[in-house]
Length: 388
Image 1 (cartoon, rainbow, N blue to C red):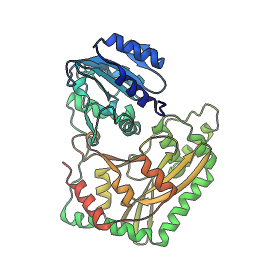
Image 2 (cartoon, one colour; image 1 turned 90 degrees about the horizontal axis):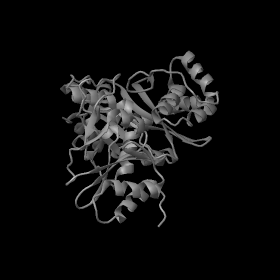
Image 3 (cartoon, rainbow, N blue to C red; image 1 turned 90 degrees about the vertical axis):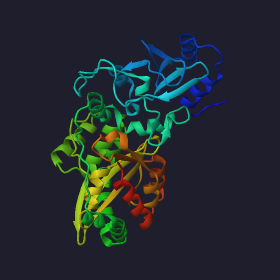
Image 4 (tube, rainbow, N blue to C red; image 1 turned 180 degrees about the vertical axis):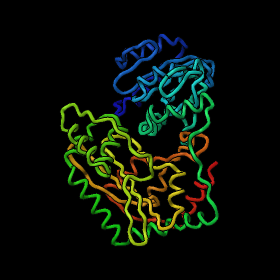
């Protein structure tokens, strides 16, 4: 049987191994079959990294790996192959999949990577998906847009019981009424000439920097790639934009270190009757990844103010080609229904953050529509408000 996905091939091969719980023997078979490199306890190739472990049951408390070693491989699917008495199980142990760090972690800080994690520190349910052999690729797509840097503050907080830095937005009765009218405001805006003006302005920015955007799309790190392209399109500091453009034209595609404001949208514009915030998102069409969406509390706070309309501007990219763009409401039916809620990742004082399903984004970039079910959108908002 031929496999399109190397992870599927690995899982299928592990299923053929019968009898015995000799970790070294099983690791050797896998290493030889897939020509893996070995670095102490980690086996890896260009497609994934593996840590083999043995336990009587799937609820194992063994120490798996140090956080500093995981950091080295966290850009790949990091698979724990657990050999139990009755089976061989697989689950993902990237930083997104960890609750906390257990051993020797008292000094863990964002600038001091310390400690190791146990099997019991690995989440077995992630965004409603079971962490098992059937969902490895899907869970890694969730992890990719968060990355090690995005998870580290959360792990420091959870491990050392530091007071959470997030902020939960408390909604009063008057704010709730304005919030629940947001789907109507969005639908009205999308039917207006203002929406055409906003789309034309953003499309013009993309067209003016098309070559630079296509070069930036070659950046391997998904987080840096997204930030660079989004700043090219919507960044306010022209000096910084020119510095980024200058760097992109060099063959090594190094970009200057820069920070983006941690706000809800990348581009704001006020029209008569509307205050718009638009978040720019890029989707490399050949890659299986889920774009970040929004911080739930920030979104609720913004949409609880008069005239507010929250939009996403998606840019679809293929090698050396910008496929298309789409300007969509947060409440667009396909977008809303495929929103992935990540409560665990935002800290204890927050409702959490969200992602969009990458396949849905691809579909909407190629064939956009502005369908909004008002009642379903209100139910969606009420559910977000009630998140504990």
